[in-house]
Image (cartoon, rainbow, N blue to C red; front, side):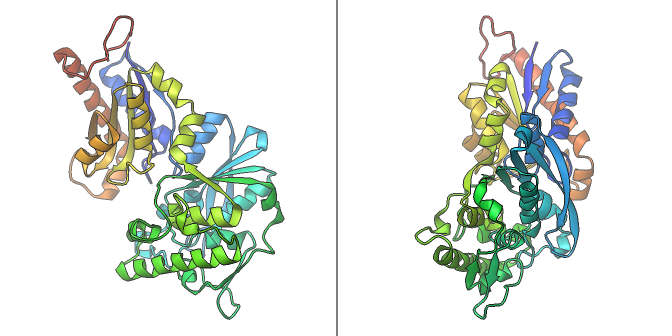
Length: 398
């Protein structure tokens, strides 16, 4: 009997991690009906992190109405309570995520993390003492200023006036006053779950690498990078002398929210996929499996930098398990295969189509891709050409 572990990320805007996993399971079993297929939700700090950790730790989900990324509308955001109420997990993507902003209105000069701060406040109100913040999928480049303002920080320009929301406020920031911030923040520990390793500023920073996908044109990218550098100077002076937010590993995650959490709240930033894999006991599940299948909406040059596929693939290879990726779109496949050590990549979308069409049919496309993978594996087994681990007592085909 084949033992197959499916540990896929969400397909942003179309399928949750568990829904994606179930689509893969259905497709695989269509071809190999006797296989034992286990589905485990995983995430890297972006969309799906609450689902993955609640499933792994047996927690409960709650919904709060918070300020959306445009600052003028409210959005329902799901967050999780773990460990009997002691620990909370929130996703900034739920409150301040890119899918919440229509493409024509995406502009990180104005989008805000205010709703993420409101989610942190919800966790405080619930009595949580540890707060996990998923840092991924953001529509913002404001270094978390919106979130901190929601928690009571005063962010002032050189005339003592509140700075505007969004990335624009970074440029005019001249002083930070945290005397009125929620005092309960001093009694909690905060951990940021990052899905990238990028620093706050510079060539690989939050503005230059991620600003364009959030709607920033070249001029806005330059302004945002300057604003983030200004934030780093002011925050180091007013909050933590001797601490440089620009040097924080993964400080550029979520438009600089990673650095903001570190400098305002003393947060520890860790790779989100590692945290989720440990919580889900994925090492034991990979050891159980003959084959690992992972996936995400887009496999590209960023996938190796803390994304779900990279984490799952490296774990699988470290335990000598074959690992395959099913992705909504694929670019730079050869580089991805080399960097991640994966055995193969299959695009889920069967041919040219619009993004709207691809997202609408995501479940069916992913199921069909899993069936194609299963057929290839069956054929490879017959030919004896798959990378083999076959041996006495393995009980599986690989």
